[in-house]
Length: 96
View 1 (cartoon, one colour):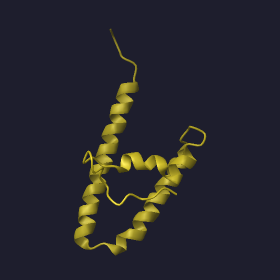
View 2 (cartoon, rainbow, N blue to C red):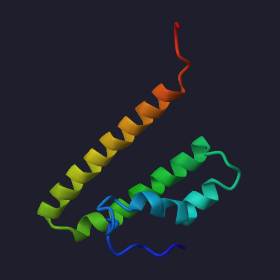
View 3 (cartoon, rainbow, N blue to C red):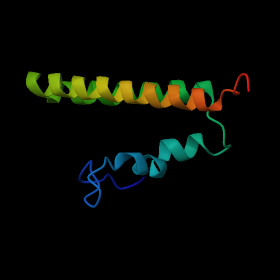
């Protein structure tokens, strides 16, 4: 298993460093063994995330819960925006 970074940010750039970290995660490497992410692998990863959230939720204060909920929501927006941009970029150009 990859070593979990102590900070969420790259000190040099100030950017979130977890985007590079995911490639070291066992769950990512296992899913990418055949080079294809299957619906089953997505479901399994979703279940893993839910399990981890259920473990940590009772450990945070209500204020931390609110802040983390906002972060998760904004991350979901970012993920949706990236997915939309990728889908749009992969669509064949019409006309011209």
